[in-house]
Amino acid sequence: MDTSRSAVEELIWERIALIPDPEIPVISIVELGVVRDVQWDGKKLKITITPTYTGCPAMHLFVAEIKAAMHEQGFDNLEISTVYAPAWTTDWLTPEAKEKLRQYGIAPPVMCSEDSDPFEMPPPVPCPRCGAETTTLVSQFGATACKSLYSCNVCKEPFEYFKHF
Image (tube, rainbow, N blue to C red; front, side, top):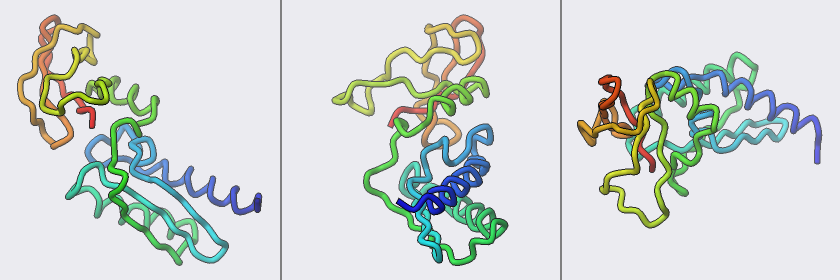
């Protein structure tokens, strides 16, 4: 294995990890799991991304931000590929991203069983503010398709829940 290639790819990953998600700026697109692969062959840089859902409006911004960041680093021979399979899942969120979501006031995804119905109520969603598990679903659909709106029955604060996909 070419160690300089690995070092270059690691630097690229580190730079891309500075690009925030436009809807949740406390996590990066790497922590979100949108960036799937980085390949540098010494001449051309290839980056593979996957949208959080088909038709995600942030994808154009992801591509623009990646291009700008790579241009700053001198990578102008760049190819960004969007792949849809396998489909993005919240399982790709890093543990650090889940904790950042919680600290930001968004409940991170609660793991469901493999065979659970996506339209069933999820397991209890702990309040990101006080930790109480007695919360109420207010709306299945929140400000974005990937979030629901909840209310805490203890501290009475509303909060968003990042759905498990």
